[in-house]
Every structure is written in structure tokens, then in C-alpha cells.
Length: 454
Ligand code: HEM
Image (cartoon, rainbow, N blue to C red; front, side, top):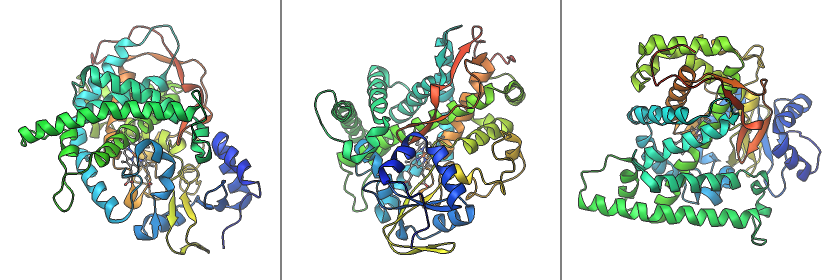
């Protein structure tokens, strides 16, 4: 039997899920409690979980009983069927291990200088006195960072073409209506789906020759395989065969997409919260200057930036960019008082769990200090998901966010055009600050890393 949920028709629930997700989740929780069932057209029932006790049951269960692939099916047209996001079982585990080796904490450190150099270049190019969207700026920056990480810092003109094509593609992919499988149809030249397919083909046309060239170079000098692309194209299957072009393409697109849009929006939310509170920004700049001694921020400084990290953690608590993660049951599964049937989707709701007043007193208050006072359970605080599917770019993303936040606040004097808590809007599966966090730079930026205080 399924827990109760709103009696609205599935199409009305879909509209609320797309356009007013935060208010809808809260209203359902108030009416039905911490476990409730949502119904969307043509999809299995979604049992939403808001308490860490229930979320723990999901994340600590055998992954064979709860598959994430079907829950991630919405992104399949973009990332392809061979993406780690879509796989389950032994195939998932093999792919995940391979990618974790590329994006572990040590390898993230190797990219720290690139992250800072690209951030400095972005700040140097910002206008003074003219409003611009910080969310868009972060999207462009994080995309450049992941392109440089995958293809090398000198990605060159081809790198620029990749960035442009991906930006076009993601602008189309974020349209909420493309989340509805029934609307993914080619209904003529101007329909979003047709344009989306054309951008996807353009992206594949850029990636294929690049992979081919890297594979040839690798064959010629097998020892020169330090970069991420070489490790992806050079990887072999369990039986020693080279991986197929299709597999490599899906993995590359997964990393390009998962590796920047989330981070960009998490940064946009963090800036929105911090810029509204001058004392928070001052404390971050003070900490950065103390830890670096005025030198450029490097990966080796990041462990010392504890307050900066707490601000990021608190922004991701209040406004997690992926607000829920799903698992489809392969067999009946017990959560609390409910035994849920095979086929149902269980959905740990990150957004609601982060508002549990038992764990986070005064949950709507922005209070970074909470994260200076010891560890929080990974089932109560889960901006990167959990269990066998926890985000494999977590170390990379946290390092990137610290470097960007520290570098920008130290150099640029930014003011929000319309201060206050932004409303949530969906960009595809990501929850983004509505209005894009418009800001104005009040005066020209300080030179890179002069140790000054804004
Ligand atoms: C602030 C930034 C980020 C956030 C908030 C975030 C969040 C998440 C979440 C919630 C999941 C789903 C976990 C689950 O189902 O339990 C996930 C999965 C994933 N993320 Fe991230 N992510 C971020 C950055 C990144 C980066 C930088 C990369 C790559 C370099 C990345 C690659 C992935 C991949 C490949 C998966 C699938 C893992 C699997 O299915 O085994 N993410 N992420």
C-alpha cells in the first residue's frame, strides 16, 4: 500500500512539480506528513521521504533493490543510455569506480590553479556599473573549468566551440516542458525538441574527432596518459577490449553536464545569500587573507577556509540545486510503517530533509555557524545525494566553489540589484535562483590576489 498524497490529477501535480516545486512539497508535507505519494502522468508513483531516518533506510540498502537508472531517465536524451547516471548493477559499479579515480580529492587538487586562473579572467572581464547575471557568469565559468579539466587547459578554439555549443544545448534542455517525455517530439523546424536534437548532433560532431585524435596519440605514446580524456578513451572493459565510442561519448557528456550546471547554480545561491549579508562577505575575505597571507588561493589553502566552507554548506542546505533523488524499487521495500510495492519510486527529498527543525533549528534562517559545530549525519544533510550513488564530483565541486567564492569576494565589490531570497525556478532538473542573481560591480576589481579587503 502507498502512503497518502494529494488527490490532484497527475497533470496538475506535474504542473506544480515543475513551476512551484518548493511550495508544493511543503504543502504536501504539512497535509500528509513526512512520507507522501506524488503521481505524475505516465510515471510510477513517487513516495517522497523527508526524514533522515527513512532516507537512511534507502541509502544503506543493497543497491540491487533500488535502481537509480530509471529515476534518472529524464536526462537520458542529453547524456545517453551508457551514462553512469543511467546504469545500475555491476555495470554501474565498474563505471563509477573508473570515474571516481579521475575525480577524487587528489585529482581535484591538480586542477586548483586552472580554477583560479579562469575565475580571475572572468572577474577581469566583468563590467563596472552595469548589471549582469551572476548565475549566467557562474554557468560560463564552471563550464570553462570542466572543459579545461577534461580536455586540458589549452582547449583552444575547439574548447570555445564546445563551450558555445554546450551553452546552447543546455539553454534548450532546461526548458521545463522538455522534462515531459510526451513533448519530446519533432513537430517542425521551430519546436524545442528539433532544436535540441540539432545542438546534440553539433556537440557529438565536436567530441568525436577530439576523442579519435586523443586515442591515436595515446596509441603512439601510451605513457603520455595523464589527462582525463586519455584515461577515458584509453580505458578497457573487463575482458581487455577498448571501450566503444558510444560509451566514451556518453561519459564525456555526463561529466560535461553534471560537472558544471549543478556547481554554477550552487555558486549562484551561495552568492545570493552571502552578498545580502556584508558581515558574511567580510568574514570570508578576512579568512582568505589570513590563510593565504595575501597570495593567490591554491588548493593547499582550502582546508584552512573553514568559514568559507560553512557558508557554502549552509547555502546548499537552504537551496540544494538537486532537490530530490530517486530510486525505483526492484522488490517490495519497507520504509518506516510502510511496505512499498516493487515498481514504486522512493524519493529522498533533499529540500525537505534540510528543513527538519529537529536537526537544523530555525531551518529557514541562514546560519553558516551550524556547520562549524561538528558533523551532521549524511542522511540529514545530503546536497550530493547518498549511498552507492553519491555524487562522484563532490570533492571537485567543493574545491571549485571555495576557490571561486574566495577569489571573487576578495577582488570584486558586488551589490545585488534586488536583494532578498530568490524564488526557486527549474532549469531542467536543477533548482535555480529565479532572476539569475543580478548584480552590479561598484568599482573596478582589485588586481588578482593583492591581499586587499573589499
Ligand atoms: C555543487 C555541485 C554538485 C552537486 C550539488 C551535485 C549533486 C549531485 C547529486 C544530488 C547526485 C545524485 C546522487 C544520488 O542519486 O544519490 C549527483 C550525482 C552525480 N554527480 Fe554530482 N553534483 C555536483 C557536482 C558534480 C561535478 C563537478 C561532477 C563531475 C565532475 C558531478 C558528477 C556526478 C555524477 C557522474 C553523478 C552520478 C553518480 C552515480 O550515479 O553513481 N557532480 N550529483
